[in-house]
Image 1 (cartoon, rainbow, N blue to C red):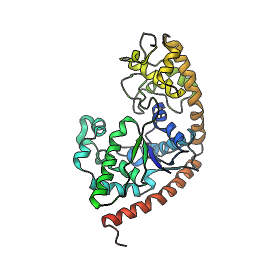
Image 2 (cartoon, helix red, strand yellow):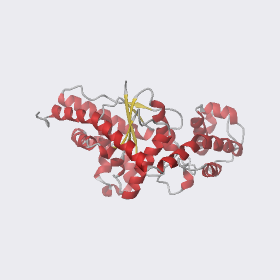
Image 3 (spheres, rainbow, N blue to C red):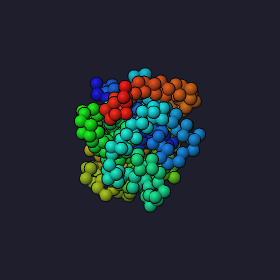
Image 4 (tube, rainbow, N blue to C red):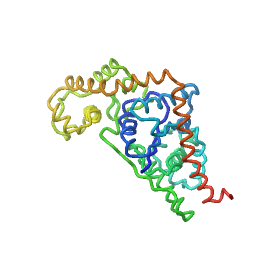
Length: 332
């Protein structure tokens, strides 16, 4: 069976974009692939984290996986820092990757902004660790959003260069899985900006643990325009907020944008937002309730992570030992 690896950063405020772009797909893939799902806490510390909050956020992401339907008994769920092979392989890959490759990574430029010289080395070298996350398990596929495609291409470049440099056919060239509509969910307050956990306005996002009242209020107040919904997708051109809400409806209901507009074309946003609110509450309400239930049992969450870490080490350990032999770090 083909193997999937993917992860989510524990930086708090998990939201609808995280669910539609990643976590929901994780649950849907678990019956067709061998799945390894990681809370990537080493990636989180590329910027400073409050220690107590980081512990809580690791558990929150784990709870979101389980609440969204991922079975921890049949899949591996763990946090990255508990499997040392990730960091060890990342150093080896930092010696394989070229400086020019990392200089082309647009996400570093976006996150560092004007303060590039003050950014951490970890933030700059992030893609090497991401490659190690994936290749420590020889994963064949990674479900990714648009913003991670460039990093996945770098993972392929690193795997290919490693194989070429040592004359082996060892690491697979991992393939991306981009699934479903609304993989890039935008802010409810600005349809041109991605929905983000770091946005200071809580009204810009639907958090996975929001209750029905909060979900309905945020959708009702979501920014739109004064025109009715069009009957065809072409009519959404230049209407970022309208396109975002229609895309969210399509993704939550597992239908196409065309089907949404066939039902709501010509109507005003009051009717559409009411329908979207009911849909979002129906789909997300049970997940939020289950996350809160799980959060009240940290001992169980920690047991899932401990069990997953043990299983992950059992897979990654032999692969790293083989890497050591290939490059001459292991003489026995």
